[in-house]
Length: 149
Image: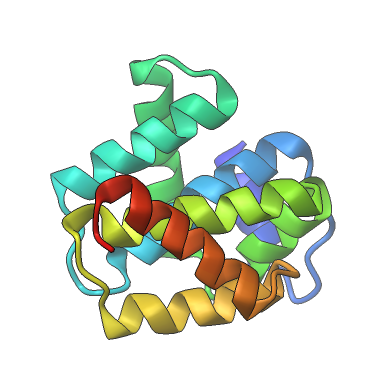
């Protein structure tokens, strides 16, 4: 299954991915944003697990397994566009806004914004069809929940 997904992600013109692959793409994208600042720690892993569990109705073990698969896929994929394309093909616009909010949730798990994380999110949002304004509103909602504003 993972070899097939990796082949599709690294193909010159990847084909649309099935929903299960979109789950893996989201997992990989969450891992990519967490790793983008050069630090990938237990707090980020726990946050990713919680996001995946809530989004897909998984128990703790299922969420951790999905994240682990996402870590493998993220490490082998040549670019972020393939993840965003898979998500955009399978996820409604409203849910893509929730994806941006989830990405901000991972970025802000430590209470700080990093330039690399900000830059990657500014790249990801339009690839998912989300305007900067909506991404900023998603960030503000996360900051409000965490008491960062």
